[in-house]
Every structure is written in C-alpha cells, then in structure tokens.
Length: 126
Image (cartoon, rainbow, N blue to C red):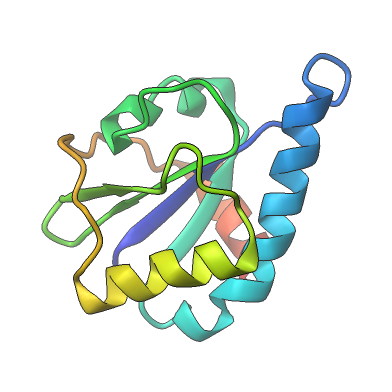
C-alpha cells in the first residue's frame, strides 16, 4: 500500500506558527482521509531524525507541515510547498494520486519508516 508521510512539529514554544499549522493540517487530514484509507497508509512524524530524512520524499524546504507519498513502485509524490493543508486541497491531492495525474517528484524513497511512524499511523487512522 502506498505510504503518505506528513512531517510536523508540535513545538509551540519555539515554532508556534508552524505548530499551529501542523495541528490544523492533521485535523483537516483526519477529516479527509477516511475514504482513502483503503488506498493509502497515512503517517505523521515530528521526530527530528525523521524530519531530517524528508528530502528523500522530495521535500527540499523547511516549512512545516510538509507531506509526501511513496508509491508501491517507489515513486515519490510531494504535496505542494505552498499549498494550504485544508480539506479541499488535500482532497484534490488524493484524487490526483488515485487517478494517476499527480506530478511525480524527482526523488527516491529511503528507509524512513519506523515504529514511531507506525504509532502515529494508528492514531490518525482511528
């Protein structure tokens, strides 16, 4: 199953704006993904080691949240850098992925899935 990883921060002390955007993005994602749960596994992580690996998902910027998908063929699709994480844009991105019309990133997927990502997948999938 293709894997979607959302990179976030919850550091309200040092990055309050980013933390607020990330919390809002996860809430929008929780409302958007139910109809796609059979097609994609969606994880999120705020682990610094994982955040450092986001370039392998085609994410070449530091702004959070950010998100990418690794397909079964190890092709990478990155959510737009300046695209708001709202329900409408998330829905359009998942539709494009489902229809095969999403633009592929010029990156390859590394070994970045770990137990913490799995725990976060469980919490977002409920």
